[in-house]
Amino acid sequence: MNRLYHVPLSPFCRKVRLTLSEKRIEVELVEERFWEQSPEFLRRNPAGKVPVLRLDNKLLSESQAICEYLDETHPQPQLIPRDIEKRYEVRRLCAWFDDKFHHEVTSKLLYERVNKKITKAGYPDSRNVKSGSSRIKYHLDYLAWLLDQRRWLAGDMMTLADITAAAHLSCLDYISDVDWNRHAVIKDWYAKIKSRPSFRALLADQVPGFPPPPHYADLDF
Image 1 (cartoon, rainbow, N blue to C red):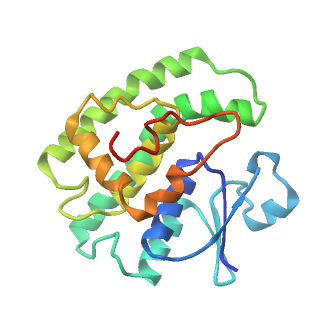
Image 2 (tube, one colour; image 1 turned 180 degrees about the vertical axis):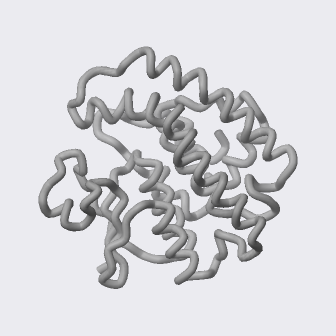
């Protein structure tokens, strides 16, 4: 059976979940307490990170590598353009969110407010939270700039860049850390993705001790 070892509020896991759903690949979701570094999990991925995908008896790790593998082995719908320039732009934006946005925002807000409590790693660092709350404004402004010029983040079609950005923002939306009123164009873009069938499972996520806000699952937020 195909399985995805994940945690619900990981943007990297959500990125893979969305890709799998867009490709209509059914998997069993298995929550993994990766921070405990169990020998069994380390055998699946020596890096000790989620997501890990068991697909057709292969073990795949690292979200970007997994998503590109899925796009090559299950080419419909296409999430990474075949045109070299467009493919570069998709990969650039995926890296932007998985690296820069993750470092400056996701790790400062989500990890401080949620992950520390779940993993019993202490209390939130207010300096990090303040930094993340400040830096997200810069990133939202950048998204708005992109969407003012394009239908989707990387061009005229929805791509893995949109999925990656939505994965990060959905985690932050779960804890009410996205100001959707800052730019109408971003809210409209997110509403389009949020309304896709692939997003339904994410909107149904419930993390014990952290109930989502009422608008989280509302398609007309």
